[in-house]
Image: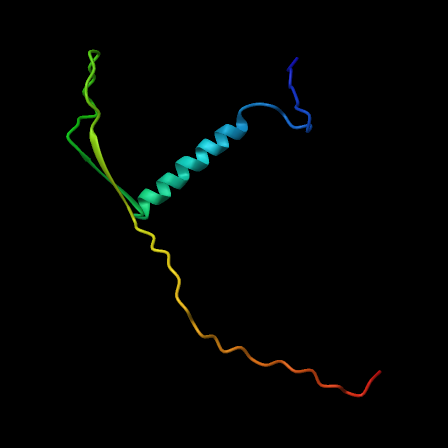
Length: 89
């Protein structure tokens, strides 16, 4: 017999929510790298070298696009709206 446990909301309890959150984070990071919003320049390091005594992590130069936020004053022409009285009461 299978023992399925439910939480107080009636849903199955478990780590499935965390799996979806991790999957979403991986997809978002992949899209940011694929579109060029993020770019990574890895220098001075070899990913295949393994040392039990310790070592240095590779230096990574991560560039992200700059987002510039500011304000400026604009004049906007707003149309005038009127109501005609058609004589009904």
